[in-house]
Length: 297
Image 1 (spheres, rainbow, N blue to C red):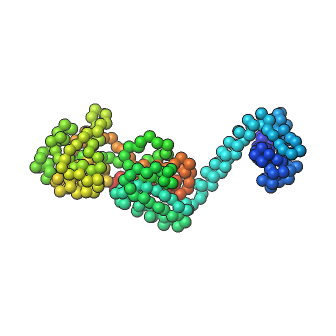
Image 2 (tube, rainbow, N blue to C red):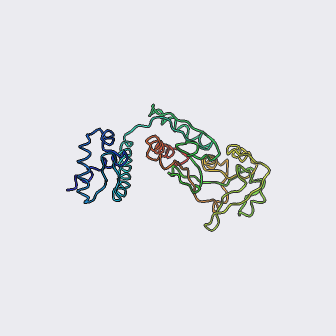
């Protein structure tokens, strides 16, 4: 009963788009008589005329125009479904362009991508490490790894790993200048400023930005860490910079009650590329690889 409901749809779309039975037959690789029979049966099932026929051309009726719009959408959906299923078994290949922040990319992402390429030799990867936020669509990028809180965008986001910010200092600094016990006391301390002079904190469950001051500034997280280890001042840095030093006692965590809730490491990609096997499989690989790192266990 339902088996023939799709019959004639491709033939109808071909005739409507080509404007002739002969041209439609050539497109589909069938005979004109086959096209004519299929459309006649389709009109009979629908109990309505879809085409005005003449010796030279074919025109759509009002019902035909409405039906064409829906048939084209059905064709697009069918092709997308077929591509999606095919991609599940396809191997990543071709060029994949991606971007990530410099320090995190060097330490965490690039090594994983390199190992991923060993498994898929037909894949080529172009990684741009930059602390600038690139427009993926404008730059022709397939994937971006972003840290922290996401801004509203039309990109698809997948969470790869947690990310926690720590406010800390070395024991030598605290011995000389004392330990801050409240956010207001930060103004009395030398704060090591990285890419921003505002630190993200929370109080009574609400996040806020606290402006800080100091005599030292550098837009390198590693440089901020080195200065903190030397006792120059307080710092606020992500977990992957400071965890090993907190465990060893080289740094001390401060104002824990005011530390902001966990942010995250994200994979972002344009909507139309989310079914690409090279993007999908790399994102899965990065998520699994980061979960194995000591920093995230």
